Image (tube, rainbow, N blue to C red; front, side, top):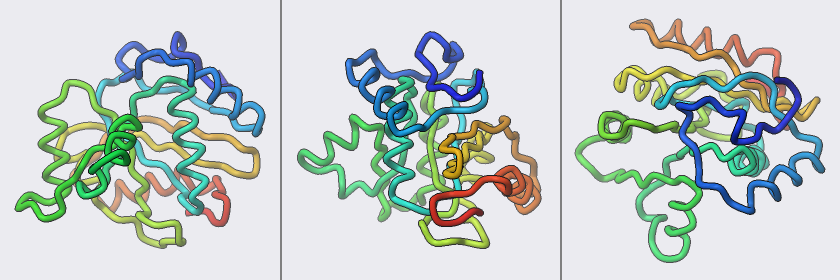
Length: 198
């Protein structure tokens, strides 16, 4: 299915989903009005690390959250634990935020590998560039999380020229991190973010 915003009935059965909400139709309407659509197929797996690139604008997060809500996908993201206090914390949890303790003995990668081991379903979204600036090298945390947890990587691309969010093929990591990352970056080569490509 190409050039559309998926409805919940069109999602694969093992993909984590959000509860039904009136916001879903509203978000689909906003995406259609703004000309954005999805191209590709979602994988039918309960756990994975989703990477989104090129990340060149704060708009990427807006389009990503709207798409997540529009299709009812339960995709989580990490944020430092200090942000999860008060009303902002409740909102972050509702949006799929996972608090990370940066001062813990176990680092961020170890905390997420442990979390994958504790949950039967978890889609974790990460921007591998780690910043909106153009980065000739990606941060490796996403690969180490996926490899350590034994879950695949799912590449998703923002392509601003035609306003599509492109769903890539599921990618299993090997023991060669550098080669894996180069193959993943090759998938993104044709796509252009708001301000730059990969």
